[in-house]
Image (cartoon, rainbow, N blue to C red; front, side, top):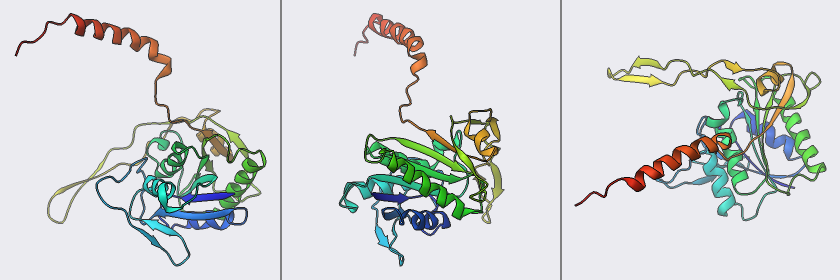
Length: 262
């Protein structure tokens, strides 16, 4: 089994080091990760500047780009082979609910999925790296379980996994969940720069709005490892019928509109 590892905290982050050390015991692994922290970069690709790849003392390769950049160039020429699995993380903090839209951790995994490769994003619920070795062991076990069920190397899938910061023997079983929802983010922080210019800092993420049973928020709050399958299709399938009526009316109005003479 060949695994490509990425993250959004940067190639020197403790989370990716722990993930690499855990997975290299069960697979051939390579790390291609951002040079610097790229949290909340989502699926962004760098199209207006060149990307450079360097090799660190420990063999990790790092890129002056986003998480999605790293996976993209790895799969389109850097590696020279197609990995069986793309794994992103371990992130320093949760990626639950609406976080997944912004998450660079999820974005890296999603890039693997878009290339037709099974992919997993791993995050710890709380920041600070407490019980990181337990999280890494949990990630390794989940990868091994997927391999034993012959799910790696088959059809592509995308999983988002959040692990409570707890000792390994205290963690509860993996629980399949849907994404919860957050309240709107807190207000931007406004400050003055030393030159008298107004600066804005994005506010903190909102508190959980939907953390009911069945959500990732609820599962992790009760000590479970939360696993959520994700998809990329953003189509509002439930309301296609409603919008079909609107589209029909718009088409009719356009058809009956008089031609504009030049």
